[in-house]
Amino acid sequence: MFENHLIPSLMLSSIVLMTIVGLSPSTNIAIVGLFFGIYTIGYDLFLPIPSQIFKALYDQNWLSIPLAIFISSLFKNFIGIDEIILSWKKIRKKWRQLSAFILIIPINSVVTGLVGGTGYNHKLAFQSNLKKIYKKKPDSDLFLSVQLISVSVFPPSLLLLIFINSTGVDEISLFSTIIGPAFLYAIFCLLYLIIKINRENAYSMEFFANQKTKENSFFWKVVFLNIFFPTFVFGVVYRIVTIPEGLSIGIVLTTILIFFTKKDQYKAVLLSSFKQTAFLTSIIFFSFVCAQVFLKTFTSVGGDDFLISNILVISNDNKILLFLILVIIFILQFFFGWLEICFVFVPLLLPTISTLSIDITWFIIFVCFCIHNTSFLTPIGIKYFSRKYKFNTPRIQPNYIKRLPLFLIQSGVLISILTFHFL
Image (cartoon, rainbow, N blue to C red; front, side, top):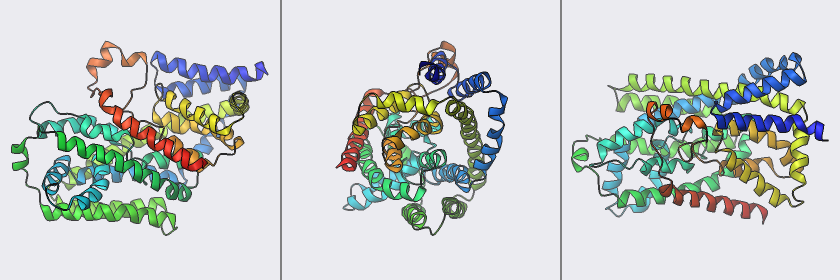
């Protein structure tokens, strides 16, 4: 038994150790998979991998990933942060508080870039915009902290699309089940955002006075966003359109609106969106290829049996084991990015979850609420503390005290859906 479990344990220990040393998580996962695969099985192990990857890439659900990134980038250029704050400052003094509250939910998802799950790549852009809005040093956490996951679990979130492709979970079941918890979480995070906006008295009124925001244009943007999201989910759940078809329709309509509302900027917006889509898509598929090398080796050396046997000896209670697995996933994010969690660790745990007779759809939902945003807690590694990295790479340092309310919201919603599921 010890010999059978030695190699899987060495593989898991190696990727954690190499990540702490400072090597890129995706790269070290691939290196460990290659080394142990060639050493224990041989080159024949890797012959089927290219065909498996190409087969996966030709699956239409994989096409939804670049489409989601592209539409997210278009949305972020569709409505600016200054328009959001300016409109909220105007509306909040009127009697239409409830209407404004409902309408701002999808707008908030656009601002934070969580429609496609790509918001964390725009931290410096947010900081630049906030410097224009604030008189004093901007509170970058005002919007960035809401990226914890508040609306990133709303379809068509990139997080959900990657889980659909990496685990094979049914997208219709996932979308229809997660919409309730996601909406609840979004409301609590939105309340936090509104409180932050109302408490902040450092806005530059001169900046807002110089803004030439077309109210009619902004109104139609809001109407479009509030129609698109529920229509997309309805169409996918009832099999009217597929995910790529729904995203493609959204891209066409958004491009038309951008053309009419930003005639002098639409070319730059499209070019920027193309560049961002190409960059992020390459990162995602590189992580996917690296993960496939590791997963193939780990499964071939008995990794599934290793995980099942070691987890089942802890307790006979499925609830305790599920809680333990979720805690492990949360802790792993101190060492690995969310892509490695989605592509490597969650697929590794699926055989164990099946053994525990836990519904895969609900397990993915639980994991979604365990994943914290990369701007929330930085993965641990020597390179993150090196002087060279600190001064050569501009970053926004998160204020963890300010993130505590959002962490409590996340934990509260997770506990609520766990309780609801097991009642």
